[in-house]
Image (tube, one colour):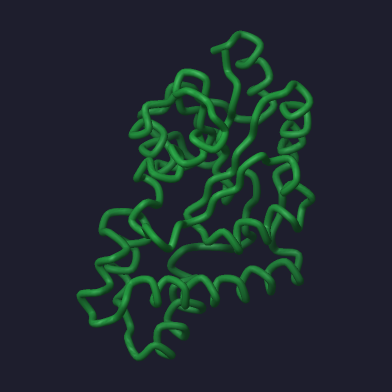
Length: 217
């Protein structure tokens, strides 16, 4: 029986108009890095952001990795606030299913590689924050615990007190699929853009989760 669903946030529940990681790197990350006195090249930054390199890898450039990522997150906060003011962050219309899942007594968690602060900012902006029993962003005490590492997924399950067989992860990306599989739980990919290999189930609308739960997968 499914007792809990863990949701990714960015590009699963909300999306950013005109956003790309490369553009974010150029417009937001580089100015923030210059203030720290270090500029990480694009390919290295991309690999750290995508989990191909540990986030602690930045220490090879002579800077504390916690200080570095906190600076990135402060810059990201300003960026997200600007996009919200400009109406360039949007919630997907099928996100209303969260209210129905909550009404069914399903425990809900939101887990993001963004900071706790930035994750809550976006969820709060669209009136979603209070529907989640647990919201987790990156943990500064273990920055390499972001997806595809299962750390945040397992932390959410511990807080929710649910077993692996009772828990499902819903996300849009390869990082989500890998994190869920690394945590030993079933993964549903919401295909917002492209299908990712390795998920257990594929849906094109979050409303399909209701049918899956009725069938208990």
